[in-house]
Length: 72
Image (cartoon, rainbow, N blue to C red; front, side, top):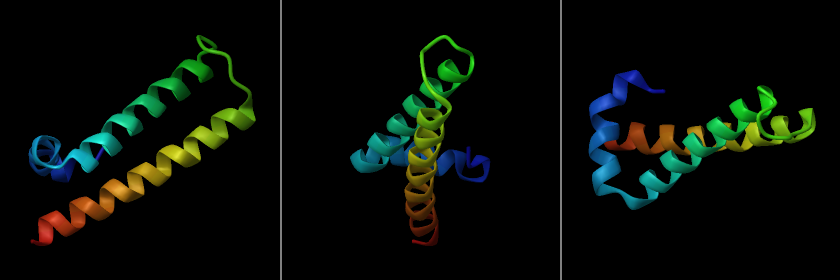
């Protein structure tokens, strides 16, 4: 995710608690979705779709932060 911002992500994860929370929540949702799709964890297609939308929202928030931080 965001390979062009790899160094900036590393920096923000140590300096920005809000970014770190978003990043961790995104990764947690990603793993839950993978587990549900692999039938390791129970989940309906509707639940998976809801989680994917939540994950996308987190990604959008992180993208905004990355764009602002890279422009600064």
